[in-house]
Image 1 (cartoon, rainbow, N blue to C red):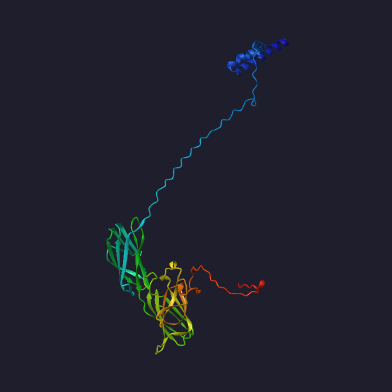
Image 2 (cartoon, rainbow, N blue to C red; image 1 turned 180 degrees about the vertical axis):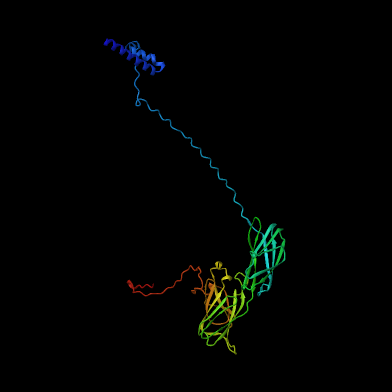
Length: 392
């Protein structure tokens, strides 16, 4: 009975296990599994003998040959050939002339001066412009004739002609007034311009101011200094230069720019001294040298002085009635000299050849002397063999 129960119980267990397995397996493979489970030996006997495929591993699988990635490089843009433009023709200078006249050309403060400008075309021109800034010593008064205009902010004159034919002349007249700030020399410069033409200087007109005499008293004990009204001349009297008190007088005789077409000195003035008493006797000689300083900085174009010229002080020799140079020096446009007497003085150019090769410290110039100075000096030496003697 126990054996029966064991046999029956084992069969029930087998059936339960098979039910569980069949429930868990997919439907498509359940009967195959059941057959194998029931008789695996018989199944192997009935299965044909097949060659077993070789086992594969990662080591036996050849690595795929990497395909190189080819990146297409952008082809460079072709460099355009440089286009050579023909050189532009240089602009021609404007073919016109400007003539200026001042009437009168000299005056005192509050005097009126009439300036006339004559513009002449040498070719057909359009929109010709004349421009000029008035110097500070001149004040604008009025346009007397012509179509010019005054620009107060720029203190300038503007004159425009829309059309000029070759040979045609136009005129403008303006009136200016000499003011209190005017120096002894004023230059009113103009420029000419036109479309497609190179600007150029149109000339200038010169107006001069007159200054009266300058007088100063100098003490014999303390000395003194005279400064001219035009600001050009300064004379310093050291103490003891005169044995009596004197009155010194300066007169401005002439002033001109170096480029003015004139053979006279660019600056000329006179100095005189008189005893400061009833007699008023002239004093020509002094007990000590006086120092003279003359400002000519604005009268000379210092950058264009020829190498063979330099600026010097002159005095008027009454005996020979001629101008004579005297020792002087120049620095920053100031001429300095020592005076022992009074007469007329002037500032002008002097040539190097006037002094030959005398050293001078008046100004720096490049010497063009490229020769050599030679001389022989015989030296006696002891006699040589055979009595021969050489002079060397």
